[in-house]
Every structure is written in structure tokens, then in C-alpha cells.
Length: 132
Image 1 (cartoon, rainbow, N blue to C red):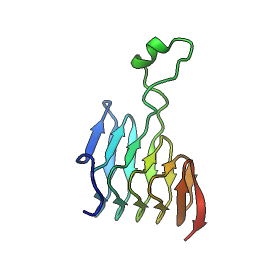
Image 2 (image 1 turned 30 degrees about the vertical axis):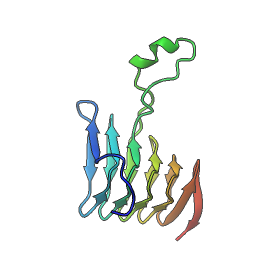
Image 3 (image 1 turned 180 degrees about the vertical axis):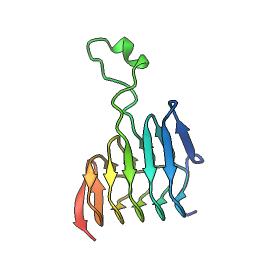
């Protein structure tokens, strides 16, 4: 593999009833999938090394009681990645993201939101570059 991977693939289901579904012929390299509720990845997807895909923000900010932050779970929203998507290295997919079919995400992007089929997405925050 031509990109240095910082770790092997980590697939973590954090709660009873949570699920991670990975479609047929999908390749995932040295990335982390962490589900509190649901992550679904379609068929024939490519997920490059060092990506982070998580359906929860992890902790609430609790700016009035920061010492309680460690006991919270944050906002949880399922993630859906359509068929034939390609997610470039070191991308972060945030809670609630929906990628339509055939999307391409540029390396290093931070993705949040809903993107139509055939979208080329990139940046921080990621935005639609063009339809492909």
C-alpha cells in the first residue's frame, strides 16, 4: 500500500444495538469506524488509510460544567456512505453525513452534511467541488 498507515483497521461498536454494515467488495485500509448507532458503507467503496468515521461527537461540550464532559456521549447521528464511493486518505467523516452513490472525497477533508450522487467533495469543512 502506497500510503503509510498509522494503525490497522479498527471497527468498534460502542453500544448494544449499534451496527456497522460494510458492503460487498469494499476495501478499508488502516482506518477507524466507531459506531454508537449506525454506520453503513455500500458496495465497491474504497476507504484510504488513516480515515476516521464516527457517528457521535463523543462528548458534549458542557461549557458550564466541563468536569462532567467525560461522562457524556455527544450528539449521535447515523452515517450512510453509498455504493462506489472513494474516500481519500486522512479524511474525517462526521456524524450525520450522507454520501450518495459514486462520490469522491479529497484526501484530508472533514465531511459533514448530505451530498448528492456523483459529488466530488473536498476541504475543511468539505464542500461540493463539482458533480462528476
